[in-house]
Length: 278
Image (cartoon, rainbow, N blue to C red; front, side, top):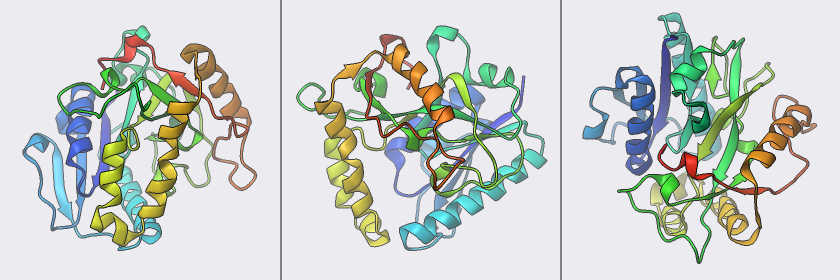
């Protein structure tokens, strides 16, 4: 079995980080989780016990410069972990979960241990929304996937999150500079950052994020909820299979190491087999 680490950096995000620690801790072991809190004014939560969690001086004050600095820092940390004996490093935000299709009956570590990875491996991105009128506000006491059943197949979240050698992630982990990407079969990246209207509205009022320039970004991402509410839900297995092929072949002309999907807006309903994962 391969030795695999997962890393992230957070600021004022305990809601997601708690779930992140629970999930990746169960899949990889808490001793293999590396968490940096962006700012020494943060507090390391009790639920991080058993992980490598530490405070770090705040990186930047504006969203663009801060994001570049954050990913440069995390790329360096991933390289150090690989040099220290890890076979793979997973780099994701606290609201992102790399999962294996449950029908395979294997853990994330077992799946990745069986893969031949040159530089990186991507999971197919699923951007979860809320179907207004059908799905109520999210609560913390139940798995996310028992409360949210619709996601847009999103190229933004088909990220080269899993690396086998030192490299430099672009902002948001969206690409690796100088390298192509490869999408793993039956592997998904679930993004929950915009899956609840109430939480999204609360984040619009977060003074720290507004100062950094996140307001316009969050307003833009609210459209995921609109898509999941208004667009018809399509068959999961059929359309994720299509998306893997399409995103492998299609590339935006401005970034040939990112996936594209012909501007298609495809919403799928998540099968019940996923409901206990996250």
